Image 1 (tube, helix red, strand yellow):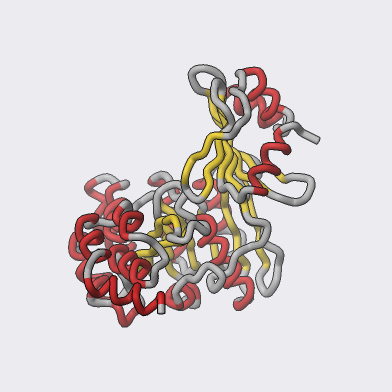
Image 2 (image 1 turned 45 degrees about the horizontal axis):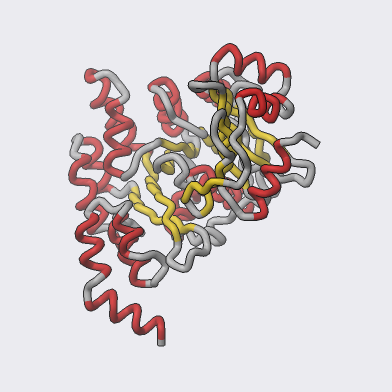
Length: 364
């Protein structure tokens, strides 16, 4: 048994989301969003190298030595899966392991709003799931694919780096491709996917101009495209998509985006007030006529106003979602304020009579 398995089994037992192995440091675990030190001694550069190289293939080791970092996945003997990033640092090397739940999640199981299902029922268009690193984007995307798999007869192609949740065919035919192993990069894989008779393409990371351009083209051609961006709000996401392109192309890109955007789900993960894991806080934008006009006219700064007036269409601002989590007692005001656009306003709300009254009703 590879020696790193012992650390991964401990990680499973304490339900940690991440394990960090780093030269000159004790192994560390992220539990409910907080990094915790283990009681293990500090690891030397050679110990970290041995722990990692024992589970990497020769090709992966060669790539890591050449490029200085490596993304891959690893499966324990009992079927537990982990996403790994190995990287060189000063001194030595380090690695971050992310635990991938054994079962593919469902939208209902994640408590996601019904509006996401409405977006997925559209035969074409672009759906973006956004948020910072470690905000649960991959989990939400996997649940979206599972919803399609349960309800649609589609050919779904996923482009991921690395493969995380592994889907089995239900109503859909699902082909999953790993960047770096099955294809060179996202842009090349997306270009190829357009010739592979898909109904749906999942782009694990829209990280450069060419990938974003091809994703928009795919949506224009009548495909349903699911993708991610590392942005913190719906308005920021719209701006980011356009700003990637040269100034003389941005007007045309905004026009295309306005025509194909089904919606945006921006999310953050917060610690639950009861200490039992984390919960997603969402901001939802739906591609209504009003929203499309704002995108087309380059008025992304007014998107929040459209979200505020679009509650009947399922839209909600992050701060409003946070207030609902506070009212339900799911998170504390202090925790919500860490993620809010208006931290002072969230704290004031948490201590307001309305929030205290709601808390009193829950206790009774």
